[in-house]
Image 1 (cartoon, rainbow, N blue to C red):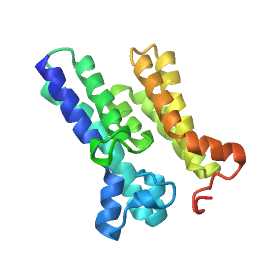
Image 2 (image 1 turned 120 degrees about the vertical axis):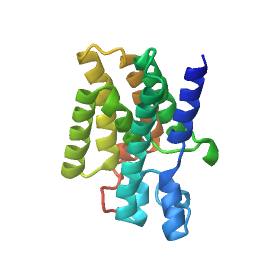
Image 3 (image 1 turned 60 degrees about the horizontal axis):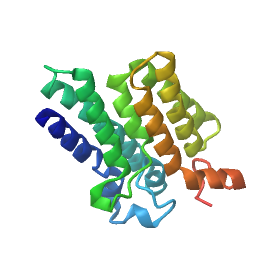
Length: 198
C-alpha cells in the first residue's frame, strides 16, 4: 500500500498549490479571493492581470499533468494505470479542496485538463478544443469550462475507458463548483470575458 499512499499524498500536495492566489499575492500584493468572483482560478485572476490569468491556467494544468507523470515515473513497475489514476484523483481533489485555503479552492477545469493529457489523450484534445472554441465564440468562461468538463466522461464512454466513473465524478464536482455561475446564467447576468463580474 505504500506506493499508493505516497502517490496520493504527492498528488494532493501538487494539486493543492494555489497558483492563482500565490501569483496575485506575489505580483499585486492582493488577495484574489476578495474581488470578482472570489475564486482563485484563471478567470478571476485575469480580472487582475490577463498575464497572471494565463500563467494561472497553465500552472493549474501543469500541476495535474505533473502529478500523473511523476506517479508513473516513480511507480511504473506495478499497475501503472491504477497509480496514475490515484495521482489524478488526488491532484484534482487537492485543487478543488486545498488544505492551505480552508478547502476553498478553484473550480478544476484547468487541472482536469492536465490529468487528461497523459491519461486519455483523445479526450484531452476534445476537451481543449471545446474549451477554446467556446471561449473564442461566446466568451463566457464558465460555459466554456463546463462544456469541456462534460465532454470528458462522454469521451471516456465513447472510448470505453475505465476512467469513465472517475471523470463522471469530477464532472459532477466541477459543475457543483460552478453553481453560482449557473445561477447567473439563468438570470442572464453572467459576465463575458473582458467584462466585470455583475
